[in-house]
Length: 236
Image 1 (cartoon, rainbow, N blue to C red):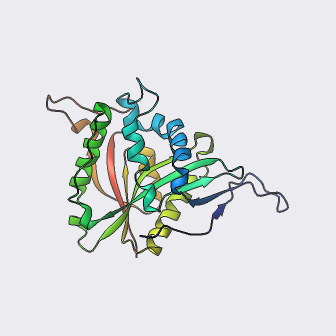
Image 2: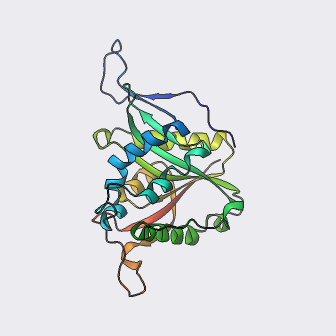
Image 3: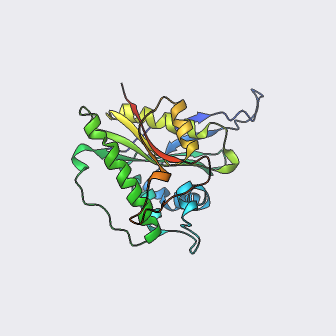
């Protein structure tokens, strides 16, 4: 599948009101394989340290990063549909890492994980994927674009950057023959963001109901993060 080659899309953050002033916005552009290390540096600073599941199990308490999490995050980049928001100075201020999932992929062998803490997250996401059953629920869908990771620089939050990334993801999905965009929201705030964009929830798993073999709750994030939800957006 060919990578996207769209021209940059520019957004105004409302900082500059003068029509004669230099643009003060940002642009949304494709992520390439050459960006992987820069993207990882961004994720280590923000997503790795503020994602609710990472925090509640102390994923980075004993190490500065998690190789398994890094691999999970950047794995979709070679598909060619991941996006970054870039400031006028060239700094990454947001990312949306999107992977291609095809009906023919559903029986592929699962990736092994040697990190016990991250394995818990992986097992949860595997359960969510299985029980959400995208291809079973939507027999007409042959492939969808999966928003695996979305993160925004905390200094730029509340300025519509996540919305811009999600909007552009929907646009490129439609242009490239995808029938659907899917997002798993482990964060309450991600759920609110995609709901505003017209995504529909098809599956919910409350963290309090997800327990280990001894009946102990595995994930207890701080409020308001009480559940993981799967959202989908149908492409007309």
